[in-house]
Amino acid sequence: MRKKVTLVTGAAGEVGTSLVQKLISGGERTVLTLDLSSLPYELPERHSHIQGDILDSGVVARLVAEFEIEAIFHLAALLSTRAEFTPETAHRVNVDGTLALLRMASEQSQWRGDPVQFVFPSSIAVYGLPTPEAKKRYSRVREFEWTNPTTMYGCNKLYCELLGRYLSQHYKQLSAEEPVMIDFRSVRFPGLISAHTLPSGGTSDYAPEMLHAAAKAEPYPCFVGPDVRIPFMAMPDAANALVGLSTAPKENLSQLVYNVTSFSLSAADIRELVIAAFPKADITFEPDLKRQAIVETWPADLDDTAAARDWSWKPAYDRERAFSEYLIPNIQKRYR
Ligand code: AKB
Image (cartoon, rainbow, N blue to C red; front, top):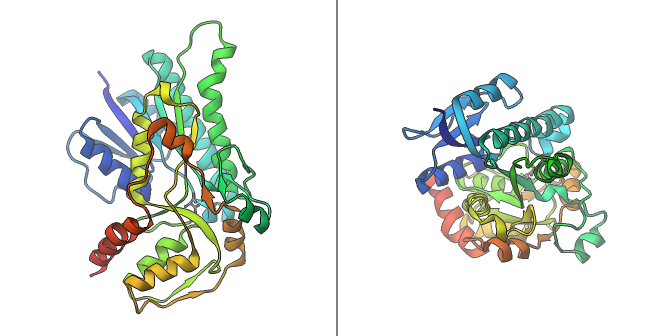
């Protein structure tokens, strides 16, 4: 008998670390983590970790041979700045890796006679506002608007959303029998800020970097200008969103992809909040024009009313709570 598990890829990363703790503390699932690295945290007994590459077909075969996978949170990805430096590698990891797991989930759904749930974190990077005027005018973007990504990562995320849609619907039309489709669900995240981990390779990283540098009493040259504005969310809400969407009754979901967000801030707003907590913080603005150009195409805010309506999405941390109750105290504790 294979052990029934929920698979989390990219489990050693920022979102993975937070999600795995949440899934384990929920007590209902047995979690199988997969990452290129060893985990930076301990897994309690009954949960397991495999160190390996999603692009290695041997690893995917081993997953299926040893475990019955009921649900997948597929977090492994190369983020937007990193992907611009190595676009083909990013395409392999972000698209080929996702396709391999989607294919495995589809085959397992047939085999089980029960859909494997596939939860896919997408991103604000799927949007591309063509000009600063458009960004100002269309400030709260809905899921079907402005999906013209300008980065390799944004293209990868948008395409994988479409692959998920294809695999959850299209076989139905092609096949005479009644095949079992995967249950694909996706959230588009804004910039995420964690008190416990630092991201690497993202373009929204200036927000967490500013905070962590201030707590370490290090100077921080922010790589975007003060007026650049995008939406953000505290890391615990990212895990809440993934689990909230995963546990929502299927019949309540009117779409496969949902925006989720919490608060919208300019880089100057973030600096102000950081200085209020760390008055000696030395934060300057030294825009890297390429990275800034990427953030300028991302919307100033996201419209997440569909998620609120269909699965009662609501962030626990608004701007005030995120800084005063989660980020500042935990970051202070971390570097004390
Ligand atoms: C990135 O900056 O690449 C990510 C994202 C917005 O998806 N944080």
